[in-house]
Length: 441
Ligand code: BGC
Image 1 (cartoon, protein in one colour):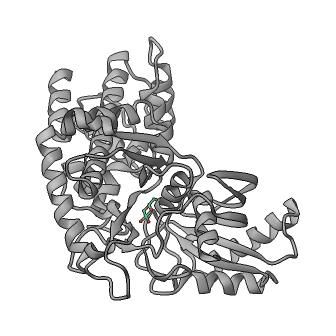
Image 2 (cartoon, helix red, strand yellow):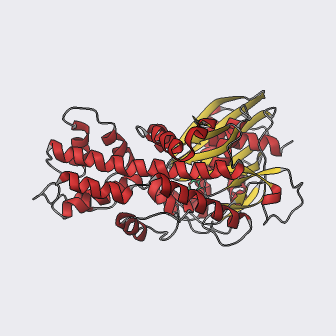
Image 3 (cartoon, helix red, strand yellow):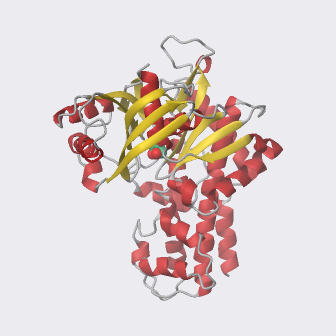
């Protein structure tokens, strides 16, 4: 019986090599449309910056907003690809900070910067340049200006969509008496991650985030950015923020459809809802709750709690998959926290398999998207490529990176050997400083 259930789930969540190839083809089509300014699920947003030379120098403040915490960092660039991070502070974002309005959100950011300057005594009064990593889709008008296209990842502060986020930040900083902090660069976290790694590694040409949200960027030839209206040498390059979380040509299960319908942005961020940490736990929970509803697991138990959205987090999925104990006790503990009072070992094993099926799909979709980006730049894979990756799911989920590498081999064969994935921690903050350095040149 259990095997039958698993087989059905495996089939529903499977992304075969052929399916991956289909995804790659559709990804290329969507990328082309996005670059031409046509309607596409991939926004392909120009970042107004190319990769760094590695020689950029200076001392900067970087702000990193986009996940569960807001971070303020001091970054020193020494040239020769060397980066130091003498001070970092994390500020937890409360629900009201991210869901009220622009005044509350940017006021919180500015007061956190003030706290950082007071506590670290770095550049408290002197003029300093600041790079702002804002990890949402932004329609940039220049290196230090851009308006929010849409919120993602549960952020919904009013009065930000369509507004220049740099102006909002400058205003809030001025209100805190911090007008000597100059916001000279605005970047998406993927762009920061690419910049940070390529500062010391010329083969790095893709920046990826697989964390609370997911996305990627890469450098594109200006001749191919058909929607670009400004002046540019056709052979010059600019980094493009793909916003791949919104890619929508993917095979959906019933659980994906139900999850999507329950969000505040139905029909949007479809890939993100199958891949990123904000949703992985919820996909797994929906499968487990459905098995329970059909009395295929935990018969006779009400387990009301697990029927409520949000009870299973992506960290739980990681803990369950990493549970190597003979009795699967860590899995039992997560289930108890989710209201399942007792479970048999066979049931816990089934839950562990469900988590593996859900996260394996996430890794394979990520691999297909990565392969699409690389082959867009280098169709026959003639060069070496380093993909800089950051984000909690990639870093912490057991076996996630291995599953991506395995899938890349399945779809690209031996040529996958040309691709190297590297974890680039704190890339988004460091990268914002590099962009600020390029901008202040
Ligand atoms: C946002 C992207 C961001 C990604 C990773 C997505 O929800 O739309 O801009 O890069 O999350 O943080």
